[in-house]
Image (cartoon, rainbow, N blue to C red; front, side, top):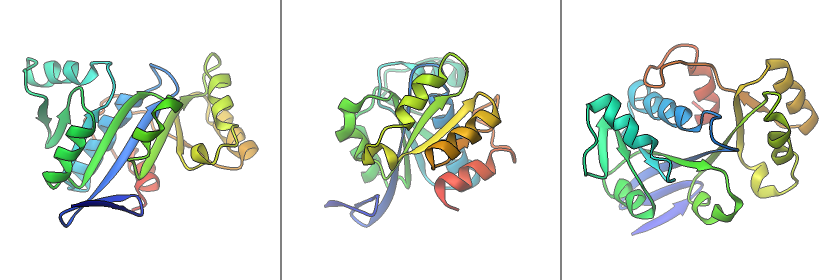
Length: 202
């Protein structure tokens, strides 16, 4: 039996927190953040964690080839105690719940309003944007919407100036979190701990 309660999903006594991450476009660091978050939860918080690639980009297969030397036919593989699912969907999410996973990080790829039903499965939703000169306008348009659905998201950016992010947060009256630059998504450094503490509330 399964049910939702306060953004957490229960399955036969197991409480699993589902975190959805999407980007305003390709190249803003969505998958990088997913991998960092999964390694933070697994390696630092010692939580049983899975990451789902809920898009057709094929990045997880490339991760498997780089980290394990080849890409197998199985739908999942493990790296540093994180279970990665390629080409995932609701079935794989259900499998994670049955397996007693405590955190599921879902990489939705590019944000699309047509996928609200999928995003609604997530207790936390993170939108990754950019404040670079050629991407700032697109991100600000999304941030400026009055839709209460989108106001409940956590907004974050790794690219662009700190001052620009601060000014945007003041203008819109909600914060845009700065994702610390981390060249290796599989390494948890002290620089990224404050960011994830804000995201996960611990």
